[in-house]
Length: 379
Ligand SMILES: [Zn+2]
Image (cartoon, rainbow, N blue to C red; front, top):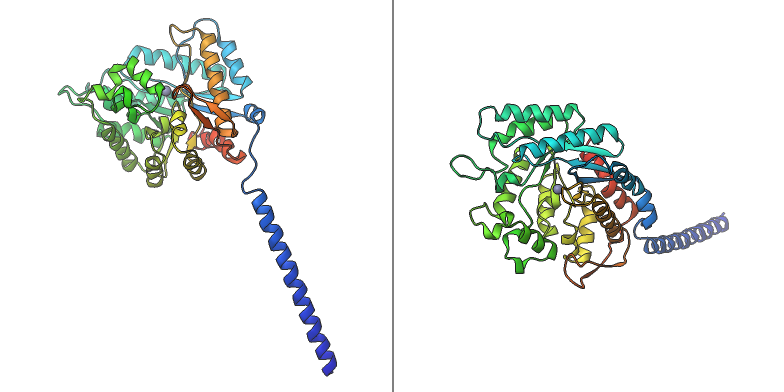
């Protein structure tokens, strides 16, 4: 019995020793596996081109009788759907033309074109303004619009009769936000301009901004101290987010906080119903620290939507040139987000190079498609 007990003890010891050794082996192999694949795999350029994607910030400006087929062929080649965003409320006829075109494209190519409506601002101050704006938005929803655009003219151009600039947190816009929320749609807000806008041309961080504000001095905040400043624009937009916590808002152009992922992160933390598109501001990611930007994108991967500000059918430009430009933007961005290749970016400045972010496939799927579906229901 004693002996048996001893054998038993001995066997137990051997068993537990074996168990310990097995545990140690499994821990080592686990940690080896973890160090081998710290992140899910990425995506090849071909896979990314073929995957269904949504460009949530694009514009169909004008079209003659030809060219539609080439335009749709480009979207098919890159498997993109566009969210065509209609602007400008302070140019009523132009806005009406764009809305008519957007409706037509959406009706004809529902799988390739979604659209966002807007509203008239030329009758601002008229007692009928609110009613007309609400009616136009309602009509847009009835015709398939998934969002409503608020443009930078609010805060930078639109004035009351007393000469004061009208800001986006003006209570007169509240009924519009309420209507959007009630219909389960999304507000698209391009409020303010890049931080560079309030700097002299030679202090701007990217050549693209330098060129734009040289060509559009009316929007160059630095030259117009009478226009409310950068932080006043951001504050007014933040006030809207605070005032309408049930409203989904997509901030265009990285929410006009393009110059600092830290500033953008603060708002994303504060306002869970706020997301941003990347339109025409990826260069501002590219001038910031690569690892910092990559970590920011991984952390806020549910709040970033791919957009370009691509524009087709602008008056005075050749459609073939527009389409070539769109394709160049798409290919350059595939390389930046999906690979770790070195990319030359003359639009930032001559000889400027950046290494791609090589994002994991699940993150690419969110930024290029899944987030758009979530933030723009019905798109
Ligand atoms: Zn735009």
